[in-house]
Image 1 (cartoon, rainbow, N blue to C red):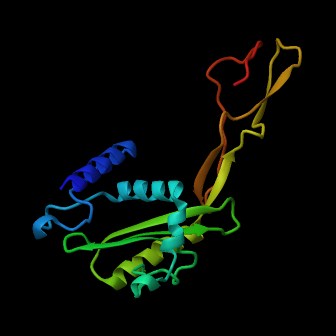
Image 2 (cartoon, rainbow, N blue to C red):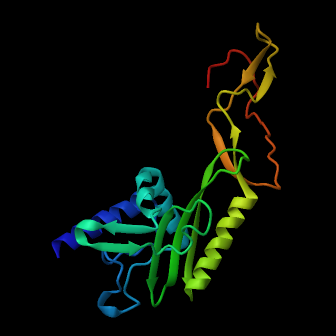
Image 3 (cartoon, rainbow, N blue to C red):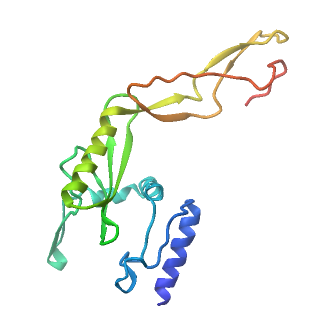
Length: 212
């Protein structure tokens, strides 16, 4: 109908905005068309990650719903237990979405904040697709999240407020200037790795200098 067509156009426009290239959205409910598993919505894991990250960045309030173990709607006399199998099992998990079709298998996009005291806080997103059992899906999700929590940290590599080097300029009155990064740069780093900053200059530095 007209509503579905309008929805599909908005979905396709959003895919282009987010640079999602693998998706093929054929309806708003995710159910294969006419029961044909070959004709249905699909998307790669990398594009699912883009979509999940965008949702969390733009609409973080969704977590107030997805972190609930049970949804109770008294007006409808309805209670629904969360389908997220690692909610309450893996520390911090507060979302995000389960899924299943015969062809795709059991799928799960999960997220959890990490506050391990190493560097800055950050958020993990794990994606499992094609699991053949509920136990397999839950187990692999737990393994992925705990690996990320235990082996990575999020560091601010450069800070615009902190000088990274002092450059001496022979033809200047002050003799030297402090060099600052043009922007902050943050990176997820494995705990066993170290970060080395190397500064190179495309041209000879000499007066006069302009800011930036």
